[in-house]
Length: 152
Ligand SMILES: [Zn+2]
Image 1 (tube, helix red, strand yellow):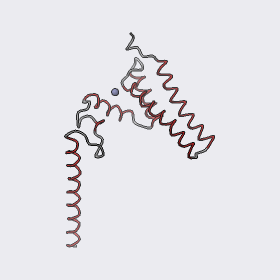
Image 2 (image 1 turned 90 degrees about the horizontal axis):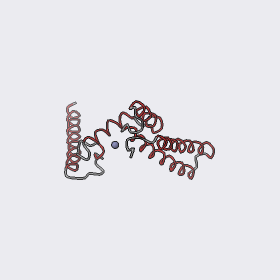
Image 3 (image 1 turned 180 degrees about the vertical axis):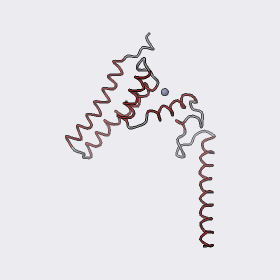
Image 4 (image 1 turned 120 degrees about the vertical axis):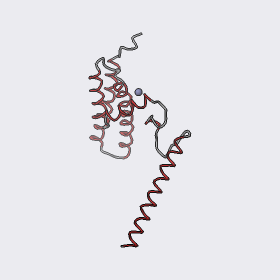
């Protein structure tokens, strides 16, 4: 079934699609300017390019494109650092933690989404404790500033 033999033609077309969308966006801005409709259309093109780039660099991060890991890392750095403006090392570090402890809170960084979306039993408690500690620190700081102000 050749499941472990990557189809380089597929990956090449995937990368070509991203580069064409990015180039098309720049050419449209250069030719038509930056009006509202143009900006909305370009945003759509760049969103598709960024999402496709994320999928492609994910494959490269898992070393599934080339047989040599060096080429996978090189292409991932090109796509992540030059096309998407993110750090490949940052993504690898975060994504490896995700795959080692998938959906285990607080080990999986992909499910730690901050105080806006808290799920499960542990996240609300952790967020509340963090916010309460911030309030206590702020009260201590302001009370010490008031007492300093009274004494001096
Ligand atoms: Zn993955």
